[in-house]
Amino acid sequence: MSSQAETILKEVFGYDGFRHSQQQIIDSLLDGKDCLVLMPTGGGKSLCYQIPALIRDGVTIVVSPLIALMQDQVEALKQLGVNAGFLNSSQDQEQRWTTKNALSSGELKLLYLSPERLLMPDTLNFLDQLEIGLFAIDEAHCVSQWGHDFRKEYKQLVCLPTRFPKVPRIALTATADKRVRKEIVEQLHLEQAAQFVHSFDRPNIYYQVVDANNSRQQLWQFLQANHPEDSGIVYCLSRKRTESVAEWLNQQGRTALVYHAGMDDQDRAHNQRRFLLEEGIIMVATIAFGMGIDKPDVRFVAHLNLPKNLEAYYQETGRAGRDGLPASAWMAYSLKDVMTLSSFVEDSDAADAHKQLMQHKLRTMLGWCEITTCRRRALLQYFDETMHEDCGNCDNCLFPPEVFDNSENAQRALSCVYRTGQRFGVNYLIEVLQGSTKDPRVKQNGHDQLTLFGTGTAMSARDWRDLFRQLIAAGYITMDDEGHGSLVLDSSCRPVLRGEVQVMQRHQTKSAKATKKSAGAELDAEDESLFEAMRALRAELAKEHGIPPYLVFHDSTLAAMATHKPQEYDELMNINGIGRSKQERYGEEFLALIRELTD
Image 1 (cartoon, rainbow, N blue to C red):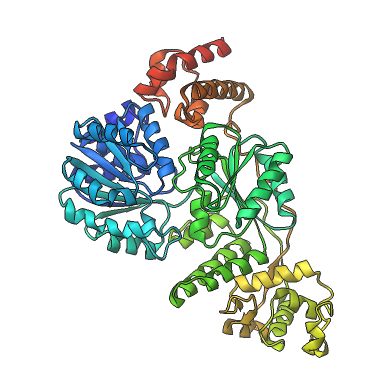
Image 2: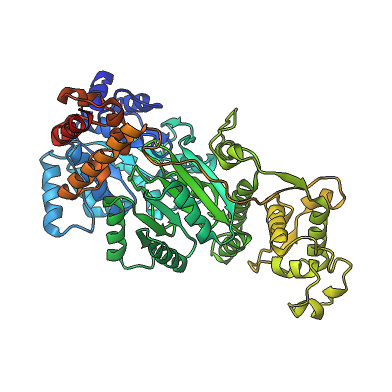
């Protein structure tokens, strides 16, 4: 079977060899065994079920959480010459009948369904009549109530092994800590499944975090320096902010679209389609956007607010650089973000245990932002992976931050929380420390009579805010359980107050510039010129066929062609990402351009 899988890998998908444990996963599925696969975004998860789908008898059912993405996933397979289809509410009755007839006659090798559609009695009864070769459950972390994308329908997929006991299953995700992995196994009854856990490292992504200070302008400086023409995603915490940031970016001369859950479905679908079809588009969105996005040439993901946890951050930033080429993950965050997210948790209907876990994950996210060591090592450590050397591709590695002993002011801050009764937020505490009575409550509460009153004038309000944020990140201070933003001391702060532990604070410096992350950045001038010409040809062909440009060829494939400059038709098959179908569809036109520009 392995030789057949290798042939398909080359002839259909255009790759010379398997990566990670793809071959072992494929062999396990071909042997009829279940699998649980954790592989980073862009690591080749889809191949793990697509190749067995082409070898095993019957149709492979792919459970995908978002209807909007199925059409793109199916179109990508059709470009490779693979017969695939989907059933969802976007189709009219005639389209659904056409798809069902193709299934009944054995024409389709892969069928994409949402969990909701799959679990409908009519759908299950129809599947009973088909020969099913495999079930692939994508974005399997959605089954976990402790995860960040919980979908209750995913838990009901436990019916599959009972109803289809002889059909192997593969569950796939790019983000799951030990707790979530355990829940996937339990909820989907995958106790006997072979588990393949790969490195979470995305070495092509540059991580950069800045303290928010006019974050829109900071974002613009980052874009101008690193991604002046690239496609990317900007995440915001609120719907209102997505709209204002997109409007502002358009005023600056970039093409920016909006995506959030409050929009009309058609408007959301239209904007998503434009983002996939056109190059250079910036999508400004809430976290409602992005799950399963297959666009490989997203060159940056920016956050204008703190994500709620590291799992969400990892998944969202993982949408950058899926093609393996250089990409950026940039974030501007503030103490206000922490307070807002904390209040969201406390105002939710979740159980107390879940709230405590979410608050812990939020503090861990904040702590990651505040670290002065290698960001990648800390991120991987969170997912129980050890990295023995610094990455050299994050802001802390390339521009090590300065730190200084600020223990005395940390003691003042902690004492102020205590002396004011642990009932107030950051702004009030800063007023007391700086000797201000602008807030009338300071006098009303008699806090202008405290010995601490006015002892913190040597530091600016912003510096105090930075210090409070770092004390929260270190766990010395927590937010009250009522979600009012009041600060409360944790017992771990006692050694600081006694002077037994130093508090080293990082200097907030200007944003360190990232190196250029464009797709052609590593090519020499002549090759980059050819690369850009091929991008223009790709855009024309994509528009002609009504498909996203990356479905013609990925940027990485264009870069390989620009480097190797194939001259003959058969030489195209030596380029990664070019299989027989794409060679036949587009080969001659790209060869003609290469010959013309390299004579």
